[in-house]
Length: 473
Image 1 (cartoon, rainbow, N blue to C red):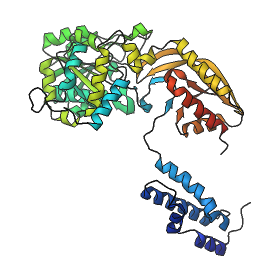
Image 2 (image 1 turned 60 degrees about the vertical axis):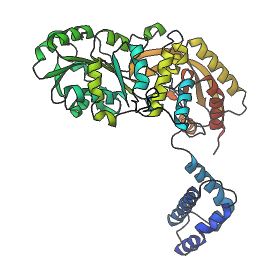
Image 3 (image 1 turned 45 degrees about the horizontal axis):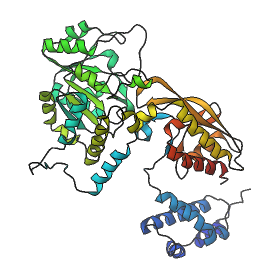
Image 4 (image 1 turned 180 degrees about the horizontal axis):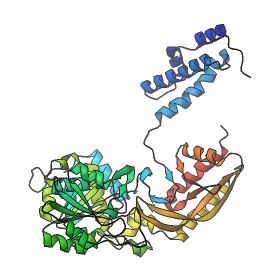
């Protein structure tokens, strides 16, 4: 029961709060944290104590002593010491998870990042001539080798690639797009908004569900600079629908002298249908169809670091490279190192499904995931006092990253149903753990899909679950 507020007692309690210097004397020999963070933790803690007294909460001098305040200080300091950017265990089953960093990089790419960070490099130095070089040349040959394009360029993401291409090729002029392709991508960015920012004037043709070649042909004027085809990878339209194939757009563009560009969004170098997934157009197919410019992401289905890739005709790519906006959108040495490693893995097309983590997870068979689940369940059931139902269930994973939205991947998961706390409490504890664990709440269960949990993460996941369920704090 809350006591009657006593101003005099509050005054005495406020006077008894230890001074910052006094508190620092308690911990001077035991903290290895930076002094700035130590002082911040002390000040925040003492301010909390002060506010609690002023708020009329029941207090006594007992709660202002070293033995009571120090544990609170260490807990607060530990929170301040935690990095904001942290690794998590992804138990959602969403492979290309936008909120969790999208694609995982293979060891060879990580080795390239480490080397790029701790050693000098030939980022813009031509080792053959001894003169200044171009950072794009470090990956352009590989990009052209893999796609069949005449030239290529890399910027920091696919939205930037689309913006740069439109700004170069259609600024102040018209770009024709089918109404059914005016998509919105993550973060509420829409194709019409990107086009407006580029200075291109949007011309919509066709109806939402059906667009014909004649719609493009009738819309072309002397002001037309571009025919833009946008691959609607993040949604599907079914029923009475029609879109113009890229080959037909290319033929029309050649006839009228108009550039044809395709934005693939989540571009891919491999036919995903051989993994049992839906058919997605590959970059090679778009290039072979004759598109003058093709843009796509490096960090989604491609499985690399965040980047926007532009390939196509050399004369057009050269124009895009010279655009001053290109410098503002250019990639750094880490992205270049990661991309080169990814591109080299794609040269070995027979093993790429095993060497690129994204493709490995997408193509993983149910039996492999089931073994992983069995291993985790066995570890958990060895623990005493778990106060939680633990069992395995069949579930469906998702591709993620805005690709193949209707594609479910048969998978296997560990399901948790706590008996000593609510599901929401368990979810919060797992998320607040030493290694945060992110799962899904479904049908009165917390589900952890192990398609997106690696073998080496299983012991960490087991420890995190045990800690969360046994935590009585």
